[in-house]
Image 1 (cartoon, rainbow, N blue to C red):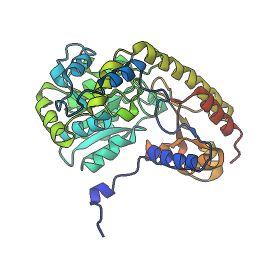
Image 2 (spheres, one colour; image 1 turned 135 degrees about the vertical axis):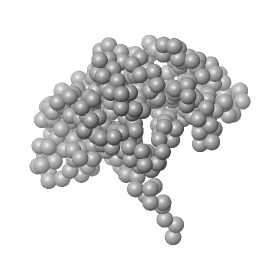
Image 3 (cartoon, rainbow, N blue to C red; image 1 turned 120 degrees about the vertical axis):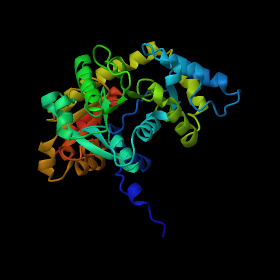
Image 4 (cartoon, rainbow, N blue to C red; image 1 turned 30 degrees about the vertical axis):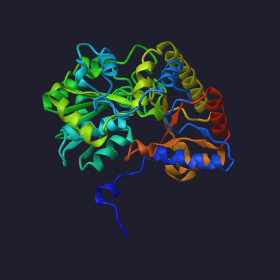
Length: 379
């Protein structure tokens, strides 16, 4: 029998995707499922991008340059102050971007800080690459945001992954907080990997960008969330000058290039701001629906939800009543109510058993229906 390598076998599941698979199986059997488990917009590719793809389908769709279409790289570089297009590489989604960042910056055995709660695939990808993820617990006392004191408590670090807005809490780092934590990283020689994939989805002023405070950060972004392009698997990275050649060589060998048709769609989608800002306005409405609906179900202890499209909720009253952790709780909700949500165990190994993440990227009607079912549920 062929056995998995020990390092690969040690990678935990991505519970949100596991829940989605189980929810889809139930739907296939005829059960209605309301999807609050995956951070996936319910809106299609922007209209202008759909038109661009249709117009291009008679053209050759082959490999592009490993770093991506030059026209797209130029447009992406324009989003930043003083960034040369040569520092921008188009990648096959943010997931590929993080792999390239981790491989470029760290040797096996390096220690990289990941916030908990935080996106689980940072931790899981680091494990797969033989790099040690160091959990840095943040909580309501700091509005779920990191501060220099958190770095000191973590010990020696080679890197730190920062996300603003963050998944699952929706926390947006202020410009001052971002400047403070990145200055502490520079002083300690800690490389910064910035996840900015939710930057377009905020409730308030635009989120501060890491490159304005830390020009040598390694930035990862994606067309998945704000641009409603999860299935197109296209994103980009902005890398320090000294790393351009290394990242491009890794891209050549690991991915060749991002999908050509997705790059065509992405280039056009950059001009769909009016349509996409309409989606953001709808997310704000959805947030109100979910927060009010959860309150009616007795769930009021939640993280800030300043941005992205998640509510991260503390639910010990349910886990204690049922006598299970949040993973088992969400499975009960799925099978008994047809409501799919994601266990906090995905995002926080130490405290996530008492938390659940609800995505409000779907339709308002589905979100309201899900909250009504939860309010009528008896453990």
